[in-house]
Image (cartoon, rainbow, N blue to C red):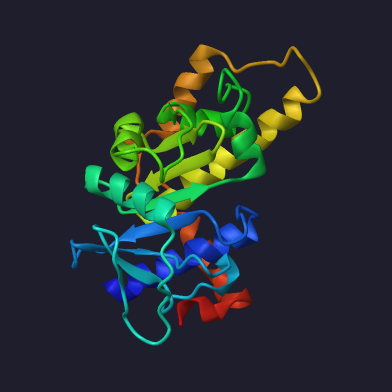
Length: 242
């Protein structure tokens, strides 16, 4: 089981690179280890996302210690990453993967007073399970991980104001899909608002159907797309599994 989780998590990093969701070696994606409840997997802070493989992911304890699993394992801990991911995974036993990004469009929308607007189908997919969290330096605020988890609540996506995006998933596929739709919605919103001050918004009745489409209770989502995404990675960067 842990080998599958490592490969799925490495796939998420390679997909983040492919879709342009990276910020040098910053930002992070984590996975719970159900067979090892005292630890989870995270990236080492010195690796670009297109360097990450199943074997060089870092096994982290929930108290912040990196565990050396072998010669390929990374050990440079991103403290902010640990605070964010350990806080969410500890508080949300129903989810197994967490993605945090600093995408350009995600940061832009996170800084808009009204947040994400009902301007696209993509937005409708996530708006029913979207919360927000005020900007704070993750490493300078006591209990920031717990505060993030409190503001996320039972939702599966969150705008971190002036900071970026955070999503969770029960599966790697679901975490990917929630981030994909949230990031696409942010890009579309930036495009629209740069072109008009009076955009057309989706009606409440139509939004209800979109909320149902993206509702967590109707998931886990992403199962249709995930095998195709894995095949794409196997064709282009098969070393991610190593």
